Amino acid sequence: MQDTIQVLDKTFVKYITDAQIQEAIRKVAEQINEDYKDDNPVILITLNGAVFFAVDLLKQLRIPCRITCVKLASYSGMQSTNKVQSLIGLTEDLKDERVLVVEDIIDTGRTYSHIAEMLRDTGLRDMRIATLTYKPDAYKLELPIHYVGLTIPNKFIVGYGLDYNGYGRNYSDIYQVIE
Ligand code: IMP
Ligand code: MG
Image (cartoon, rainbow, N blue to C red; front, side):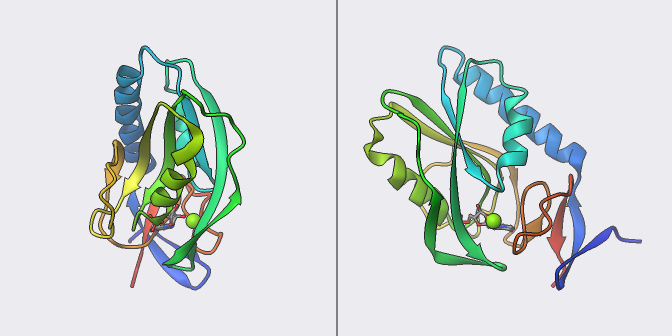
């Protein structure tokens, strides 16, 4: 019997387990601890989806760091829209800071490009991005992605912070839509 859930009008099947997610996060944390060992970066979390990843990742960081949040929205239902909206903007002074952006998913990259744009004139020292999941077949940018937890096919997923029209974030495993 397959492990399925219903979110609104769609059915999803369990795709990545909690244990696999935690193992992927452990590896990303290890790299970040090494790469930033002489620094104290600002961790920029994108609300709402990346909160789950950020909490588990941050608990494994052994470097001095601060956190700040922005809220962006680009998705409507299961489609990425061309327009990314800044619902809550930047509040922190990032001058001369190393900024590590934490994302739940990089799909087309529009949100990432919006974040890069948002950070452009802040005078920051350096920006990197860590994403829990990455869909290389959907990605349309040249911007480098520095830390990837899990590389996944171009199919819609929910769970562990990822939503379908606001629902489905609250699962500790990740589920893939059944078409
Ligand atoms: P992008 O701007 O196309 O890279 O999409 C990034 C944003 O779209 C993410 O922050 C998510 O909110 C949303 N998104 C993209 N793919 C998925 C998915 O498979 N499930 C849930 N949300 C997704
Ligand atoms: Mg979303």
